[in-house]
Image 1 (cartoon, one colour):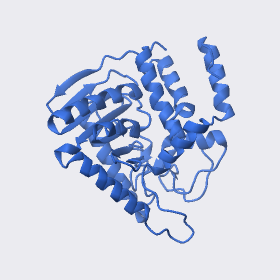
Image 2 (tube, one colour):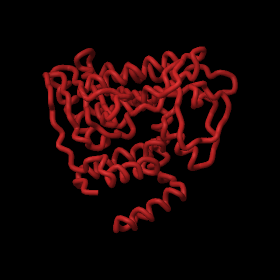
Image 3 (tube, helix red, strand yellow):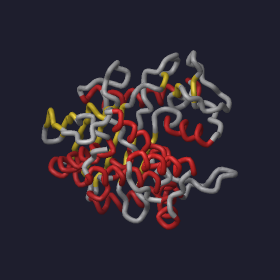
Image 4 (tube, helix red, strand yellow):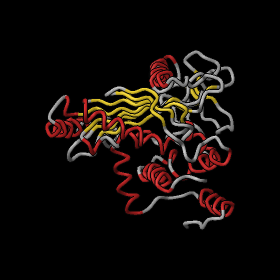
Amino acid sequence: MGVPRDDAALGADVLVLADLRGVDSHGVSNMLRSYVNGYTSGQINPNPQMTIVRETPATASIDSDRGLGIITTPKAMDIAIEKAAAVGIGMVTLGNARHLGMASYHAMLALEHDMIGVCMTSCPPSVVPTFGAEPRLGTNPIAIAVPSRHEAPFVFDAATSTVAGNKVGIARRLGVKLEPGWLADSEGTPIMEETDAPDNYTLLTLGSTRELGSHKGYGLSCMVDILAGVLTGFGYGAVPGRPNFGHYVAAYNVAGFDDPEHFKDTMDEWLRMMKSTRPAPGEERVMVAGQPEAEMEIIRRAEGIPLHQEVVDWFHDTCGELGIDCPF
């Protein structure tokens, strides 16, 4: 593929951590084939020259030269962290970008620096706005990671659509039905019953219908399209001919607001308070964002990452086509 070894290792780390945390929609099994196709077709630059086109002590705007986001975005977050260490906050946008994988990976890079990390990405249109009949927004995920001491850190990572688009592909591959309220029909009407996963589809914003709060998901998606799209200077999701993605990362230095040790102790207290909520009838427990993924990571680090046979077959076929040894 022509990707430098260090960059390949960085990208692999992003994909493997997604699988370890149970985010299979953004792991090796689901995303690697897309990236291979992107490199093969020339849509992704294997050796991008990232350029800072505008900069202040707290901000930077980067032209990522069609580089793959799982490689360029961690580098952008490193810049944001460096700025936050110096002036309390760092914000970096990346335009002319490509897919960044699991958004929370990039947000979590701030944790070891006693910082709060944020990551957003503006994606190509696949989502209808509330009351709309054609896509105008991407899945446009938002991620935030907050450090703690003993408890697993708070890590929220979610699309502003009803579901990540990659999950539709997984459902199609596994032959399972999609949940009611995930998709719109060709006229923009929400499909409120189970349905097969089609090859071509349009997603709804988070909330599915106006009565269930889709205007809130719509507003959040617009926020991402502005911060991670318009603000980059390279355009937004629905601009014809626009580079595929725009990204936004930020680091907030806790020391600029509170003593970091006190903050982490208070976060532990807050997390335990939330998890101690009395569960509703029929429910086992109340969890917080990042807890299921942290628990899954412990299991998969001990037992390994399960791969569907179709994925294993793809690896064998692709390695053969590229003339490299298959790792399993």
